[in-house]
Image 1 (cartoon, rainbow, N blue to C red):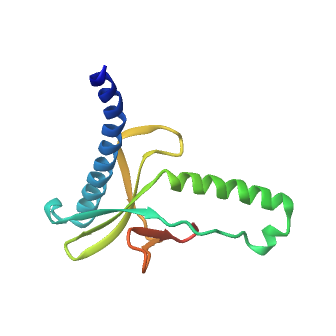
Image 2: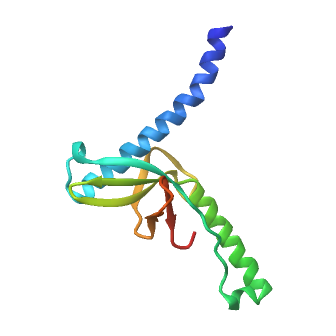
Length: 136
């Protein structure tokens, strides 16, 4: 009984750990490919997204129909960003931020993450462990 319970508890934990390792590995591999930097010279650290409120432009906020469309799109954007994992990657004298995700907009998911460099995100001064992105 105890062994079965342990297997049941360990399975989700193993999946979470594998996803995290895969994200780190995916960010390291993408950085290495982008900058021709050997993977053994690359350091990767995971970051959380620090979301700040985004307000619609005043012309949209003044029009209820346009505001409804803007709010729907903003909710979809925030949802998509919440599914991504952010990594600061350093190596060969360069530093980049990558966002990695397993599932695309189509809803199809992969076993290895897709990692893209994002130039609209930056580390947050005074809040180690976080990145902030323009428009989030």
